[in-house]
Picture 1 (spheres, rainbow, N blue to C red):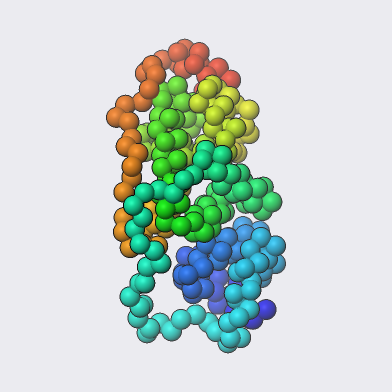
Picture 2 (cartoon, rainbow, N blue to C red):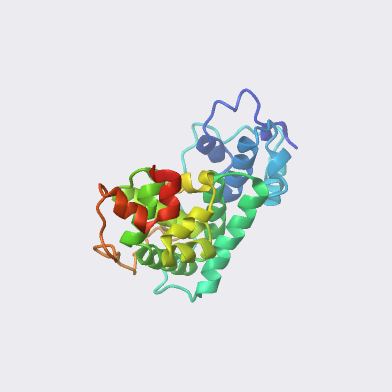
Length: 263
């Protein structure tokens, strides 16, 4: 492997995003995953733990000159050439196809032993492989599920787990539930207190930001246009509102979560 592919002392001072810029933006998703695995496992060689997950990235690096250290700083970026026309409508995508994407991501996460940064990288890779029309369809499914989860009963679960939960934080919480997978999401919608079956580390990580922005960003990279969202969000949560100062009521709504986090 070329020497430039290692995280030597000369490169570890750069941020992950900066290093990925060096590796060329047209395969950013694969590079992101590969570098992220290496960093999370504290490896000095990028390929040591990432090679098994993203072999495409290794193959791309191996095609570079051995003395390559990144694009010259004085080079100006070329005008972007967009891959696709803006589609008239989303591509067909079933519920099962949407959830299959999250299942593949969760398999990678389980194999890697990494956290939400890696999960975001895996989502980037999955969406990057889609056509613009498929990105539209994926985003539609995602926001329908976000809307379905915009409920007072689920919000109380988030509030208890995190010791408070703003509207913006609840948006992140709902997106995390979706990407934890179909079973966890659908169980939580039916019975928010079912989240007590998850371990503390998983529950406390469910305010991770940025998952909702990947599809719009990818769509714009592919087409040069903003992704027009066809699914409007609800104005108010569904269900019965609760009083955050009423501990007795909160404990009654989610007794198992309250027993762990509310006292």
